[in-house]
Amino acid sequence: MSNKILPLVLGTAMGVAASAANATTLEDVKAKGFVQCGVSQGLPGFSNPDAQGNWTGLDVDLCRGVAAAVFGDASAVKFTPLSAKERFTALQSGEIDILSRNTTWTMSRDTQLGLNFAGVNYYDGQGFMVRKDLGVTSALEMSGASVCTNTGTTTELNVADYFRANNMPYEIVAFEKADEVVAAYDAGRCDVYTTDASGLYAQRLKLTNPADHMVLPEIISKEPLGPVVRQGDDEWFNIAKWTLNAMINAEEMGVTSANVDDMKGSDNPSIKRLLGVEGAFGEAIGLGNDWAYNVIKGVGNYGESFDANVGPDTPLGIARGVNALWSNGGFLYAPPVR
Image (cartoon, rainbow, N blue to C red; front, side, top):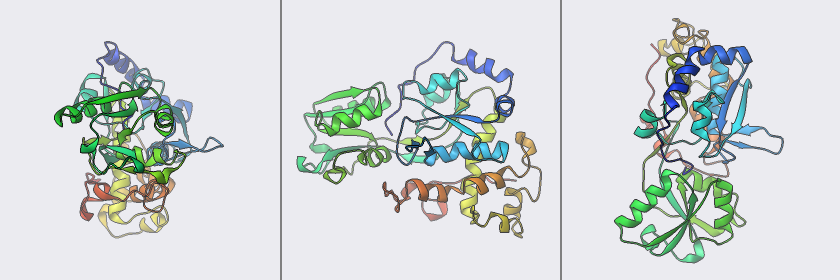
């Protein structure tokens, strides 16, 4: 999605990250009894609260998975809603333990902010949404359009590149908060709404008449979205990374939240290692050897999370596409537990 702040070199970033790593994140998390997770301010399917303040979504499930790995309890997590502008500072400062907020992995973010991306939990790309009555069927027909988006994001750069490359004039109408962008587009203050394609499907649900709007076919960028932690704490980095890997591997092996107890009796060596029946792989990341079992039992595998939050039977109705397992023609491929 387009909630992606422009990468900035913050002079104190590395110092803050190094200081935070003196007392390990895992130690801090265990001391307070929960994982503090940075999420969006409300993006259906990815991180979104209900009227009672209960958070759900693909990004939320990753945080719950980390909590399950650490505590054996997927509910041992608290959520901090963050704007695109706030998110990296909140992680750098130690306000949150992990950022799981539809955030694009780029080189500058990975090397200049004192942060590490722990993997990709959703492969995305920037797209455009318009009103059907505008009569536009392609982004190449948008010459002279006014375009709503978030301020200070890579989305603005992508739009500039796309319109310039195609010799089309345009006007940016930018706001800091995603809901402000949606409201402006819904009120007719711009012709086009642009963010990551998944975000377009999610935000369309908030429009007055969702059926009156369509997502155009063009995808103009690569947006690998994933969880982020501070640099300088390899143990916590490994926990975040292998929580995601465990969910992907579990789907490939057919291990689900419903059958994980039975699967502990499997003769498959890969399943036995994943679920902690053989080996001591949890010890290497400071956790119990049932860490992955707890993730799958408490949250489910990647496919379960995708289907429950953004899949074809949800209001978003997103097909697996490139987010299918590699064995099903998608990009998802996790290193093995061994």
